[in-house]
Image (cartoon, rainbow, N blue to C red; front, side, top):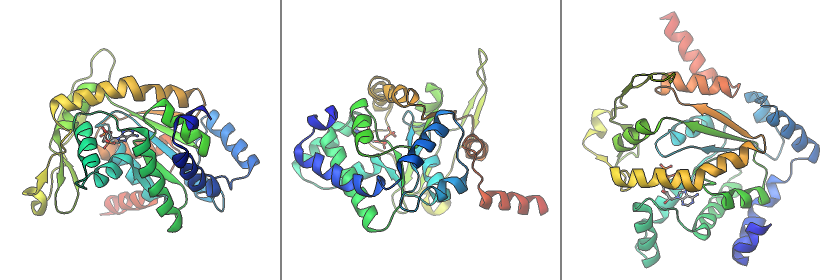
Length: 294
Ligand SMILES: Nc1ncnc2c1ncn2[C@@H]1O[C@H](COP(=O)(O)OP(=O)(O)O)[C@@H](O)[C@H]1O
């Protein structure tokens, strides 16, 4: 509870009331059974995950450096498991569209690659979870939260996290992927102009990732995130190593961390990730069957 004491009483109240009620519905026995499973790294099947508990969906976290693909894979998994994908960066960017002096100040910090104050982050996350609860959402996949040990401690105080997926990729590729990232200003689609083709060295495998090019309708509307410049990407990676990498150890020591090396583009990585999670994507399997039959 030490982390709570560092937060404002109002925030404690809001985190406590919003997250505690529904997510504590899971029985102690069910929680204990799940802890043992995750500790032994026996991954749940998609049916186990969906059947988990009447009032409680899966609660997963995605960790990993900027550019590793947290958003891409968390969003795909959220569709597969039918739980919301809550991307902290998106919540922040959305909030900072306002023109208040505070929004300006926070936006400057973000553009410099710094983490924003916990108070701001918890407020946004609480609001988002509250909206989700009113809309009947069950469970979540968090992407970009927690990013510090103190955030992880607060999260642990208020709810149970079932599984933490830690995506990993070599640093030169991360930088190229951040610099190649483009977003369509009209439809919000994410694309990447970077062509990654690195030879394996010292036992490390080769990595090939083709660019993810926009369709003609989006091509003239490409925008770049303000924090995807070379200097800021390097600053964000430094911040990750200093502040966020310890969160990996936090969950590893609790038996909840699954390390996963991103070894290629989406077509190779997605099935490998599903296999590591012991999940089956029936839709893409059926698609494969259709392709095979054609
Ligand atoms: N949990 C968090 N704590 C503090 N700041 C955050 C958090 N999540 C997002 N931010 C802010 O939003 C920025 C963008 O986040 P995100 O889109 O998740 O970036 P990335 O691509 O680096 O993983 C971060 O660099 C930081 O300024």
